[in-house]
Amino acid sequence: MPQANTLIPRPSKFLRNGGGDFTLTVDSRIVAGEEGRIAAEELALILRRSTGFALPIVGAAGIDCGSHGDIVFALEPSDPGDEGYSLTSGDDGVRIRSGTSAGLFNGVQTLRQLFPAAVESLAPVDAAWVIGAFAVTDSPRLPYRGLMLDVARSFLNVDEIKRQIDTMSQFKLNALHLHLTDDQAWRIEIHNPAINPSGLDYGNLTRLGGTGAVDAPGVGLSPGLTGFYTQQEFQDLVKYAARKNVLLVPEIDLPGHVNAALAAIPQLNPDGAPKPMNTSGEVGYSTLDADNPVTYEFVREVLGQLAAITPGPYLHVGGDEALVTGHDNYVNMVAEFSRMARDAGKVPVGWNEYADVDIPEGSVVQFWHGDIAPTLTKAREAGAKILMSPAATTYLDQKYDAASPIGLSWVEGGPFTWAEYYDWNPAQQGISEDQLLGVEGPLWTETVRSGGQADWLIYPRVISLAEVGWTPQELRDTADFARRLGEAGARLDRQGVSFHPSPGIDWQAVPPSAFPAISAGS
Image 1 (spheres, rainbow, N blue to C red):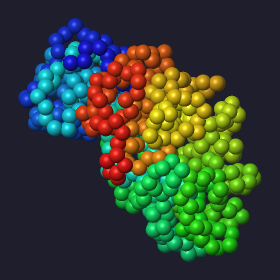
Image 2 (cartoon, rainbow, N blue to C red; image 1 turned 135 degrees about the vertical axis):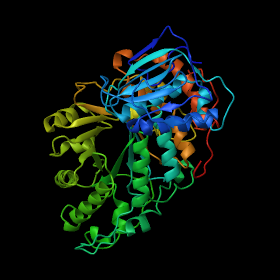
Image 3 (cartoon, helix red, strand yellow; image 1 turned 45 degrees about the horizontal axis):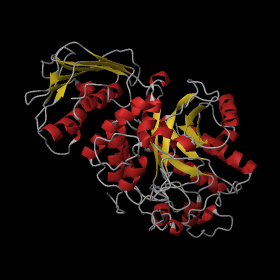
Image 4 (tube, rainbow, N blue to C red; image 1 turned 180 degrees about the vertical axis):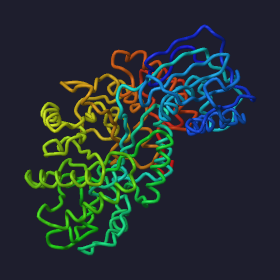
């Protein structure tokens, strides 16, 4: 039974009470009203799988409805905010309170970490399911705590995305940004509309673009994985993520990184001829044509269809590395694309080059490289929020060190371990907490060839980012986090999630594989 605070992210308040311990037994129940049903079902899935107990979910009229062996959820007004919660445990049971269903879900993630690591087992195990007498009051520092997956360069299928949602959400990460398009491939189905002035064959985006993937012979790897998501599959992912308190943020990268679109839709090109597919890792060579009316017809249709199947508030329009677009054309196109996103009811998001544009008020600028000062000034003038993804402390595709078999190495500095991703403050260089939307760790997939390899690059570094985004800066401590991270390794091990056995951590389990094999769906 964990006696010390081993929780990740570290909660705002964690106290050991003087009462007796809570023991989950074969007679225990989960008590929840309709508002707490999703959180209750999430907890039941975890506990039934590892304990073998029936753990029926029964209705409740209030927080005092349960008996001593029960876990009770109550949706009631509380101070901790939209995602905040309180949790108490003892010999009279467990009580999780929040004013929102998101808060109740976050309470579940804390509760599972209070149980022994065996609770993460994928089959029943014989263990003492005991929790000490604790009182937790908690809420996030930042509203957006994200992970980005580049599924364009190398595809991750629906099951792999769902598995990633399962893993990330236990650390209270609440946004999954999917980079759906790039030069190499196009991964989201777009239907041919009833009104189609230029006769564009949108189906060719995935018919051709879905067969593309990065080819990286220079690093000795097999080509990336191919595929695409139907709109129905994407909507299924949106619903699955919502149950795990994860918001899906789709990205269509514009006006550069568009060669797959130029290959699939010939009318986008000045000469009306399709570009050849290009699966190299080269960047900056492709652009939409600012003087071509089809450009705007195409982008409006794509963004409109994607917005219609994305209930969340954000739509990412890219904006990075448009090296051959020309400044004026870039500014005019991105401003227009941002207005299209806004017209579709979404908050436009763009990489930090996007700050050069007359963007709509309330937009989001995702900072990833360069001098942050001018980006901040322009964002502040536009009334935009900042999403922090500085490459040296958030990019999950970077090699951990020179010995890493996969990963990139273009970012200066290093090594790039859990410690570097923990030891920074996103509110820096004049960013106010009010202007700061959150943090996000991007995984670019030039060298990734399976879900297991994605895990190996993501974990444990994104766990560091989870605490950076959740825990107040004054409560964070590197040595204390290192102690708690060792316990998290035992939980990932039980779940079958690959992770990098970074030095400096007393790992409580050895990763399932020192390095995952190259195979789809692992």
